[in-house]
Length: 148
Image (cartoon, rainbow, N blue to C red; front, side, top):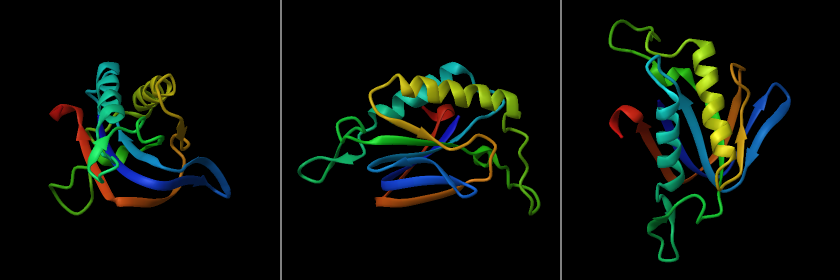
């Protein structure tokens, strides 16, 4: 699994004219699932995200995790994180999980996160979404379970 984490002061996602998920301080998580991913990968990635110390302490150093900072998660599925752009000018998505497999692992990630220590909002799986955010810092972190 791959995730792009963006520390935000606020973020929301719209599907059409409806806002389907909103957070204030926290992390926008763009989540990609590969053909090779398992529930164990999802659990490992979630654990890393929840305990990654990327929020400032009183001295301004990145020393707090999302719970200590009083933040929330906004999780958006994004298969394009597995785009292969090595050949030609059009990306290939051979490593991205098929929709049913990706949905199952995305749902597992979200449901497990909802049993965790912080509030969780989501987008709408397989919908065309407009994601709005105010990046705080800016702080953007890339995670890949193949490298954890």
